[in-house]
Length: 258
Image (cartoon, rainbow, N blue to C red; front, top):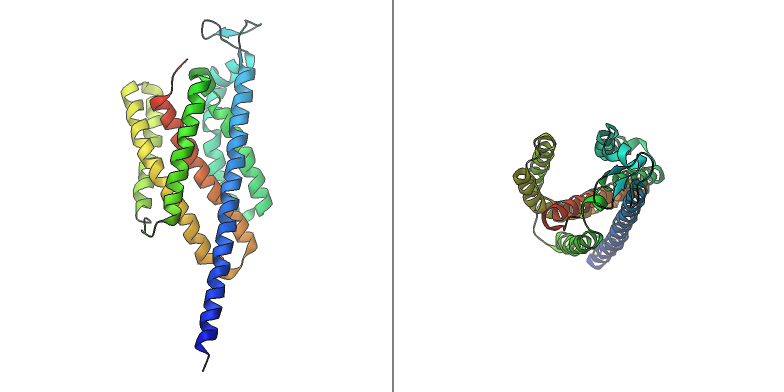
């Protein structure tokens, strides 16, 4: 008969290894996400700087008392190319999610960083619409809210897996409503989308964090390092999207416009 103390020691040692591995996994998730965020906002700021000029240049289009779109700005924001720029990040998300099993962890990480740069180009117009101070202020607010919600999702003993289907349905509804409102241009609909979006992405931040944690614990016993690496990238992508979307809807609600 096996010694009870030996069994307890083995179980305790295994649990400790999983805890250490989980912390390393979450650090990888948050670290990858943070690098992606830096790439996104650096790309957005750089592209906005190239797309807008304070002095009229050849082919420039005036958009304010002292702001002009350069030829790059016209191409990105005032030509049919704007639709490609707008929906390119969505194509990246679907492509990465569908092809993750065929990619190595290193390749998946590279694709994620490319996606982050494309997202930066896609949202670069915020620097044309909102003041720099307002963007920085909303980014700080989003960071605090995100960190608090993610920490709660990681530490809570409550099972919130049941939120998933409701939240995903909410995201689909927001996407459909946003596409419709591109053609309607209704401020009331945009306000409703933003207000509901804050609640949905707040819930998704906590939900995704708990899911990333649970998925790691469920697979930790297999010791598949390749899966762990890919899982960290997909976890970073999920939390990155939660952050970006929460930031954008808060900016729409509370941002000060130029």
